[in-house]
Length: 328
Image (cartoon, rainbow, N blue to C red; front, side, top):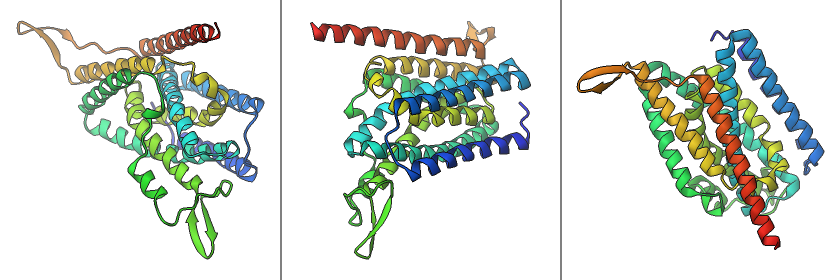
Protein backbone atom coordinates (compact mmCIF):
# COMPACT_ATOMS: atom_id res chain seq x y z
CA UNK A 1 0.00 0.00 0.00
CA UNK A 2 1.48 3.33 -1.08
CA UNK A 3 0.86 6.07 1.47
CA UNK A 4 2.28 9.50 0.72
CA UNK A 5 3.90 11.72 3.32
CA UNK A 6 0.98 14.11 2.87
CA UNK A 7 -1.51 11.39 3.83
CA UNK A 8 0.49 10.61 6.98
CA UNK A 9 0.68 14.27 7.99
CA UNK A 10 -3.02 14.83 7.27
CA UNK A 11 -3.91 11.83 9.43
CA UNK A 12 -1.72 12.95 12.32
CA UNK A 13 -2.86 16.56 11.94
CA UNK A 14 -6.54 15.61 11.86
CA UNK A 15 -6.13 13.48 14.98
CA UNK A 16 -4.37 16.29 16.84
CA UNK A 17 -7.08 18.76 15.76
CA UNK A 18 -9.87 16.54 17.12
CA UNK A 19 -7.99 15.97 20.38
CA UNK A 20 -7.25 19.68 20.75
CA UNK A 21 -10.92 20.51 20.21
CA UNK A 22 -11.91 17.97 22.86
CA UNK A 23 -9.31 19.27 25.32
CA UNK A 24 -10.42 22.88 24.87
CA UNK A 25 -14.14 22.11 25.14
CA UNK A 26 -13.97 19.62 28.02
CA UNK A 27 -11.14 21.40 29.82
CA UNK A 28 -13.14 24.60 29.84
CA UNK A 29 -16.29 22.98 31.22
CA UNK A 30 -15.91 19.54 32.84
CA UNK A 31 -19.33 17.89 32.93
CA UNK A 32 -21.21 14.64 32.65
CA UNK A 33 -22.30 14.49 28.98
CA UNK A 34 -25.95 14.00 28.11
CA UNK A 35 -27.13 10.96 26.17
CA UNK A 36 -27.81 13.15 23.14
CA UNK A 37 -24.32 14.64 23.29
CA UNK A 38 -22.52 11.29 23.36
CA UNK A 39 -24.86 9.76 20.77
CA UNK A 40 -24.19 12.55 18.26
CA UNK A 41 -20.43 12.45 18.87
CA UNK A 42 -20.26 8.64 18.66
CA UNK A 43 -22.31 8.63 15.44
CA UNK A 44 -19.92 11.21 14.00
CA UNK A 45 -16.83 9.13 14.87
CA UNK A 46 -18.36 5.93 13.52
CA UNK A 47 -19.46 7.76 10.37
CA UNK A 48 -15.95 9.13 9.86
CA UNK A 49 -14.46 5.66 10.29
CA UNK A 50 -16.85 4.21 7.71
CA UNK A 51 -16.14 7.05 5.27
CA UNK A 52 -12.41 6.57 5.77
CA UNK A 53 -12.73 2.84 5.11
CA UNK A 54 -14.73 3.50 1.96
CA UNK A 55 -12.07 5.99 0.88
CA UNK A 56 -9.33 3.39 1.38
CA UNK A 57 -11.45 0.90 -0.59
CA UNK A 58 -11.88 3.33 -3.51
CA UNK A 59 -8.31 4.68 -3.60
CA UNK A 60 -6.27 1.58 -2.70
CA UNK A 61 -8.55 -1.33 -3.57
CA UNK A 62 -10.94 -3.74 -1.88
CA UNK A 63 -8.19 -5.73 -0.14
CA UNK A 64 -6.90 -2.78 1.86
CA UNK A 65 -10.45 -1.53 2.46
CA UNK A 66 -11.42 -4.92 3.90
CA UNK A 67 -8.27 -4.96 6.03
CA UNK A 68 -9.17 -1.58 7.53
CA UNK A 69 -12.73 -2.58 8.40
CA UNK A 70 -11.56 -5.90 9.89
CA UNK A 71 -8.91 -4.13 11.97
CA UNK A 72 -11.26 -1.35 13.08
CA UNK A 73 -13.99 -3.77 14.19
CA UNK A 74 -11.44 -5.88 16.08
CA UNK A 75 -9.94 -2.87 17.85
CA UNK A 76 -13.42 -1.53 18.67
CA UNK A 77 -14.56 -4.84 20.14
CA UNK A 78 -11.42 -5.11 22.26
CA UNK A 79 -11.92 -1.49 23.37
CA UNK A 80 -15.41 -2.36 24.60
CA UNK A 81 -13.84 -4.99 26.84
CA UNK A 82 -11.54 -2.24 28.16
CA UNK A 83 -14.60 -0.31 29.32
CA UNK A 84 -15.29 -2.90 32.01
CA UNK A 85 -11.94 -2.11 33.60
CA UNK A 86 -12.41 1.64 33.12
CA UNK A 87 -15.72 1.43 35.00
CA UNK A 88 -13.98 -0.42 37.83
CA UNK A 89 -11.17 2.18 37.97
CA UNK A 90 -13.63 5.07 38.11
CA UNK A 91 -15.59 3.37 40.87
CA UNK A 92 -12.56 2.31 42.90
CA UNK A 93 -11.03 5.80 42.92
CA UNK A 94 -14.40 7.50 43.43
CA UNK A 95 -14.09 9.77 40.39
CA UNK A 96 -16.98 12.30 40.33
CA UNK A 97 -19.23 11.79 37.29
CA UNK A 98 -18.54 15.30 35.98
CA UNK A 99 -14.78 14.60 35.95
CA UNK A 100 -14.86 11.15 34.37
CA UNK A 101 -14.95 12.54 30.82
CA UNK A 102 -11.79 14.58 31.46
CA UNK A 103 -10.00 11.57 32.94
CA UNK A 104 -10.95 9.40 29.97
CA UNK A 105 -9.78 12.04 27.50
CA UNK A 106 -6.31 12.29 29.04
CA UNK A 107 -6.14 8.49 29.24
CA UNK A 108 -7.03 8.22 25.54
CA UNK A 109 -4.32 10.73 24.59
CA UNK A 110 -1.77 8.64 26.49
CA UNK A 111 -3.12 5.48 24.84
CA UNK A 112 -2.71 6.96 21.35
CA UNK A 113 0.89 7.91 22.08
CA UNK A 114 1.77 4.50 23.53
CA UNK A 115 0.01 2.58 20.77
CA UNK A 116 1.82 4.68 18.18
CA UNK A 117 5.12 3.50 19.66
CA UNK A 118 3.89 -0.12 19.75
CA UNK A 119 2.73 0.07 16.13
CA UNK A 120 6.11 1.41 14.99
CA UNK A 121 7.96 -1.31 16.90
CA UNK A 122 5.64 -3.98 15.53
CA UNK A 123 6.11 -2.79 11.94
CA UNK A 124 9.89 -2.76 12.36
CA UNK A 125 9.88 -6.27 13.84
CA UNK A 126 7.67 -7.64 11.05
CA UNK A 127 9.87 -6.10 8.34
CA UNK A 128 13.04 -7.53 9.86
CA UNK A 129 11.83 -10.85 11.25
CA UNK A 130 8.97 -12.69 9.56
CA UNK A 131 9.03 -15.31 12.33
CA UNK A 132 7.64 -12.70 14.74
CA UNK A 133 4.19 -13.81 13.51
CA UNK A 134 4.74 -17.09 15.37
CA UNK A 135 5.26 -15.14 18.59
CA UNK A 136 2.25 -12.90 17.97
CA UNK A 137 0.06 -15.89 17.10
CA UNK A 138 1.12 -17.97 20.10
CA UNK A 139 0.61 -15.00 22.43
CA UNK A 140 -2.91 -14.36 21.11
CA UNK A 141 -3.88 -18.02 21.49
CA UNK A 142 -2.53 -17.96 25.06
CA UNK A 143 -4.47 -14.75 25.76
CA UNK A 144 -7.63 -16.29 24.28
CA UNK A 145 -7.38 -19.33 26.56
CA UNK A 146 -6.72 -17.13 29.58
CA UNK A 147 -9.63 -14.83 28.70
CA UNK A 148 -12.04 -17.74 28.20
CA UNK A 149 -11.05 -19.34 31.50
CA UNK A 150 -11.56 -16.02 33.28
CA UNK A 151 -15.26 -15.90 32.38
CA UNK A 152 -17.22 -12.71 32.96
CA UNK A 153 -15.72 -9.37 33.95
CA UNK A 154 -15.79 -8.26 37.58
CA UNK A 155 -13.77 -6.30 40.10
CA UNK A 156 -11.22 -9.11 40.41
CA UNK A 157 -10.11 -8.47 36.82
CA UNK A 158 -8.40 -5.22 37.80
CA UNK A 159 -5.29 -5.12 39.94
CA UNK A 160 -3.48 -1.85 40.55
CA UNK A 161 -0.05 -1.79 38.93
CA UNK A 162 3.10 -1.15 40.91
CA UNK A 163 3.32 2.30 39.32
CA UNK A 164 -0.19 3.23 40.46
CA UNK A 165 0.49 1.99 44.00
CA UNK A 166 3.74 3.95 44.10
CA UNK A 167 2.14 7.17 42.84
CA UNK A 168 -0.90 6.95 45.12
CA UNK A 169 1.31 6.16 48.13
CA UNK A 170 3.64 9.14 47.76
CA UNK A 171 3.67 11.69 50.62
CA UNK A 172 3.02 14.53 48.16
CA UNK A 173 -0.42 13.21 47.18
CA UNK A 174 -3.67 14.85 48.24
CA UNK A 175 -6.98 13.04 48.53
CA UNK A 176 -8.97 16.17 47.69
CA UNK A 177 -10.29 16.61 44.15
CA UNK A 178 -9.41 19.86 42.38
CA UNK A 179 -11.51 19.58 39.26
CA UNK A 180 -9.59 18.18 36.29
CA UNK A 181 -6.23 19.42 37.60
CA UNK A 182 -3.50 16.81 38.14
CA UNK A 183 -1.17 19.04 40.17
CA UNK A 184 -1.99 21.73 42.75
CA UNK A 185 -0.02 23.95 45.10
CA UNK A 186 -1.07 23.95 48.76
CA UNK A 187 0.90 25.53 51.60
CA UNK A 188 3.83 26.16 49.29
CA UNK A 189 4.00 22.49 48.26
CA UNK A 190 3.17 20.99 44.86
CA UNK A 191 0.83 18.04 45.36
CA UNK A 192 -0.46 15.26 43.13
CA UNK A 193 -4.25 15.11 42.94
CA UNK A 194 -6.41 11.96 42.68
CA UNK A 195 -6.98 12.86 38.99
CA UNK A 196 -3.27 12.25 38.31
CA UNK A 197 -3.48 8.80 39.91
CA UNK A 198 -6.59 7.92 37.88
CA UNK A 199 -4.92 9.02 34.63
CA UNK A 200 -1.89 6.86 35.44
CA UNK A 201 -4.19 3.91 36.16
CA UNK A 202 -6.06 4.38 32.87
CA UNK A 203 -2.83 4.79 30.89
CA UNK A 204 -1.06 1.76 32.32
CA UNK A 205 -4.21 -0.35 31.90
CA UNK A 206 -4.48 0.57 28.22
CA UNK A 207 -0.78 -0.22 27.81
CA UNK A 208 -1.50 -3.77 28.95
CA UNK A 209 -4.48 -4.02 26.60
CA UNK A 210 -2.27 -2.86 23.72
CA UNK A 211 -0.18 -6.01 24.20
CA UNK A 212 -3.23 -7.92 22.92
CA UNK A 213 -4.73 -5.49 20.42
CA UNK A 214 -1.62 -4.56 18.42
CA UNK A 215 -0.61 -8.19 17.62
CA UNK A 216 -4.28 -8.89 16.86
CA UNK A 217 -4.58 -6.17 14.23
CA UNK A 218 -1.22 -7.08 12.71
CA UNK A 219 -2.80 -10.48 12.16
CA UNK A 220 -5.29 -8.76 9.84
CA UNK A 221 -3.08 -6.25 8.04
CA UNK A 222 0.64 -5.57 7.79
CA UNK A 223 0.12 -1.95 6.75
CA UNK A 224 1.21 0.41 9.59
CA UNK A 225 -1.02 3.17 8.18
CA UNK A 226 -4.13 0.99 8.45
CA UNK A 227 -3.08 -0.26 11.90
CA UNK A 228 -2.66 3.31 13.15
CA UNK A 229 -5.90 4.67 11.66
CA UNK A 230 -7.94 1.68 12.90
CA UNK A 231 -6.63 2.32 16.43
CA UNK A 232 -7.29 6.06 16.16
CA UNK A 233 -10.91 5.60 15.11
CA UNK A 234 -11.49 2.93 17.78
CA UNK A 235 -10.08 5.09 20.58
CA UNK A 236 -11.73 8.31 19.38
CA UNK A 237 -15.22 7.03 20.13
CA UNK A 238 -14.28 5.16 23.30
CA UNK A 239 -15.08 8.04 25.65
CA UNK A 240 -18.58 8.49 24.24
CA UNK A 241 -19.14 4.74 24.26
CA UNK A 242 -18.26 4.66 27.97
CA UNK A 243 -21.16 6.96 28.86
CA UNK A 244 -23.60 5.60 26.29
CA UNK A 245 -23.52 1.88 27.07
CA UNK A 246 -22.35 1.80 30.68
CA UNK A 247 -25.50 -0.08 31.69
CA UNK A 248 -25.45 -2.27 28.59
CA UNK A 249 -21.97 -3.58 29.41
CA UNK A 250 -23.41 -5.52 32.33
CA UNK A 251 -25.71 -7.35 29.90
CA UNK A 252 -22.87 -8.49 27.61
CA UNK A 253 -22.27 -11.54 29.79
CA UNK A 254 -20.56 -13.57 27.06
CA UNK A 255 -18.29 -10.80 25.77
CA UNK A 256 -15.15 -12.34 27.25
CA UNK A 257 -15.89 -15.66 25.57
CA UNK A 258 -16.60 -13.97 22.24
CA UNK A 259 -13.35 -12.00 22.40
CA UNK A 260 -11.51 -15.19 23.36
CA UNK A 261 -12.81 -16.88 20.19
CA UNK A 262 -11.89 -13.79 18.16
CA UNK A 263 -8.33 -13.62 19.53
CA UNK A 264 -7.93 -17.37 19.12
CA UNK A 265 -9.05 -17.15 15.49
CA UNK A 266 -6.59 -14.32 14.73
CA UNK A 267 -3.82 -16.15 16.60
CA UNK A 268 -4.29 -19.27 14.47
CA UNK A 269 -4.45 -17.08 11.37
CA UNK A 270 -1.11 -15.49 12.31
CA UNK A 271 0.60 -18.86 12.79
CA UNK A 272 -0.76 -20.17 9.47
CA UNK A 273 0.32 -16.98 7.77
CA UNK A 274 3.84 -17.33 9.19
CA UNK A 275 4.01 -20.93 7.98
CA UNK A 276 2.78 -19.81 4.57
CA UNK A 277 5.32 -16.98 4.34
CA UNK A 278 8.19 -19.20 5.49
CA UNK A 279 7.20 -21.92 3.04
CA UNK A 280 6.74 -24.61 5.66
CA UNK A 281 5.05 -27.75 4.39
CA UNK A 282 2.71 -30.21 6.01
CA UNK A 283 4.29 -33.61 5.67
CA UNK A 284 2.66 -37.02 5.28
CA UNK A 285 5.12 -39.86 5.42
CA UNK A 286 7.89 -37.52 4.35
CA UNK A 287 5.96 -36.31 1.30
CA UNK A 288 4.70 -32.78 0.79
CA UNK A 289 0.94 -32.50 0.53
CA UNK A 290 0.65 -28.73 0.08
CA UNK A 291 1.43 -25.31 1.47
CA UNK A 292 0.10 -24.10 4.79
CA UNK A 293 -3.23 -22.31 4.09
CA UNK A 294 -3.40 -18.53 4.34
CA UNK A 295 -6.82 -17.29 5.55
CA UNK A 296 -8.00 -14.46 3.23
CA UNK A 297 -8.88 -11.07 4.68
CA UNK A 298 -12.52 -11.20 3.52
CA UNK A 299 -13.02 -14.44 5.45
CA UNK A 300 -11.46 -12.82 8.52
CA UNK A 301 -13.92 -9.91 8.26
CA UNK A 302 -16.87 -12.31 7.96
CA UNK A 303 -15.61 -14.31 10.95
CA UNK A 304 -15.22 -11.15 13.06
CA UNK A 305 -18.75 -9.94 12.25
CA UNK A 306 -20.27 -13.38 12.96
CA UNK A 307 -18.37 -13.85 16.24
CA UNK A 308 -19.29 -10.42 17.56
CA UNK A 309 -22.89 -10.70 16.35
CA UNK A 310 -23.48 -14.12 17.92
CA UNK A 311 -21.81 -13.02 21.16
CA UNK A 312 -24.01 -9.93 21.43
CA UNK A 313 -27.26 -11.75 20.63
CA UNK A 314 -26.59 -14.63 23.04
CA UNK A 315 -25.54 -12.19 25.78
CA UNK A 316 -28.69 -10.09 25.45
CA UNK A 317 -30.91 -13.16 25.34
CA UNK A 318 -29.27 -14.64 28.44
CA UNK A 319 -29.36 -11.41 30.43
CA UNK A 320 -32.97 -10.85 29.36
CA UNK A 321 -34.02 -14.29 30.66
CA UNK A 322 -32.19 -13.63 33.92
CA UNK A 323 -33.91 -10.28 34.41
CA UNK A 324 -37.33 -11.83 33.77
CA UNK A 325 -36.57 -14.63 36.24
CA UNK A 326 -35.55 -12.12 38.90
CA UNK A 327 -38.79 -10.18 38.46
CA UNK A 328 -40.81 -13.38 38.95
